[in-house]
Length: 231
Image 1 (cartoon, rainbow, N blue to C red):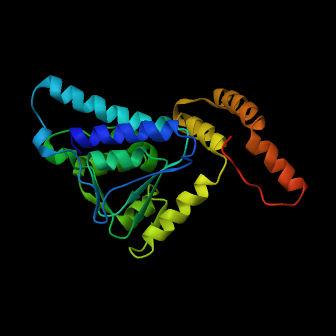
Image 2: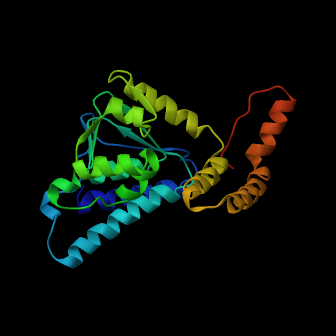
């Protein structure tokens, strides 16, 4: 994860956010590694350089969080450091049996960035997050699934087809509803029940007026399959 890759990822996320034909987004690396983390050659240095790197990383994580469409992290091999943080920022993580997650920052005398402290504690609980971050140990695919931050775990051979199937199903869903639900869910730990109910009511007034909702009612009454168009 270097300056060039951060720029490419930011640009791709901006394109996907603006393109109404994109209904779901998959972030994945190679067949053998999701992301090995930050480029060692870019670590340290002048404060201004470090600040620029962190601004770029923040923009990526905030773009993923704000994208009003499902974002899936498809993890094979290592998701380390910044790669782990980016995976956690996605709406769901799916993996094959080779996946390994590691908050490697402690081994470099650093703290997690790109939201690594924020998302991990929300996924596994405060004490488990501290143990994973303080130890910097590897969390294999099976443990990640047991901890709950990997939601689907497939064999290496099945992974490509299963990931494509999941992304396609999400892309065929009600995009407006996904986007609003995502927005509320990402705020759920900072929101009291009264505020959550009010935000749900406001969101429901938007989804109730959508083409997808109206068409789903018509489809139900006419006993035909519904086709969502994301509008």
